[in-house]
Amino acid sequence: MDFVMSLILSPLPYAPNALEPYISAETLSYHHGKHHATYVNKLNELVTTPITEADLPQIILDNPSGPIFNNAAQVWNHTFYWNCLSANAQKPTAALEKTLAKHFGSLDEFKKEFTEKCLSLFGSGWVWLSLTPDQKIVIEALPNAGTPISHNNKPLLTCDVWEHAYYIDTRNSRPNYLKNYWEIINWKFVETNLQS
Ligand code: MN
Image (cartoon, rainbow, N blue to C red):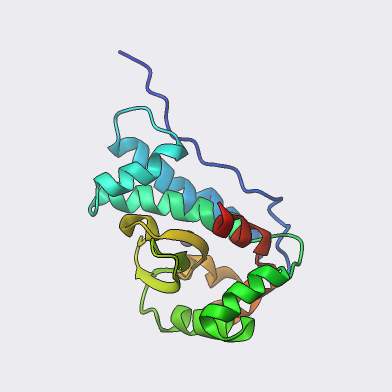
């Protein structure tokens, strides 16, 4: 029997306590170490060929729904989400702020609109800042494992609004989670995504 290389849970890009006090080490230990890890393990059960993280976009496109889609998209979305957060407080560069202002009026208006989408997404899902193929910047609220790569939009920023992302820290309060979220955005990552 051939040995099949399993997909490996990608490590957090910072220490587990790096996002405190906004996201606790306990939340990260469950969210990354249990939830994200479970999606990796389930995907490895479902896919019998060797895969790496780099194969996930194609797997997502080839499986538009069902268990393989759900687990592949959840793995990809979580790795992207961790990279959207930063241990070091940042501000967007003037160039990025100008781009966001062009599409949303101002940086504050963008944050307000994105937050509203996060608060009004019923149940579990992800809210994305995405670049469309015709170079429009849009906010997309996608339920469950939804991801912009399914419809060829390029993800720039995401917020995981599944309850498991915040229940330990802010209990039932998604608004308080969102307040903390804006304190730890990796704006450099957003800008790199926009330019790549
Ligand atoms: Mn999650």
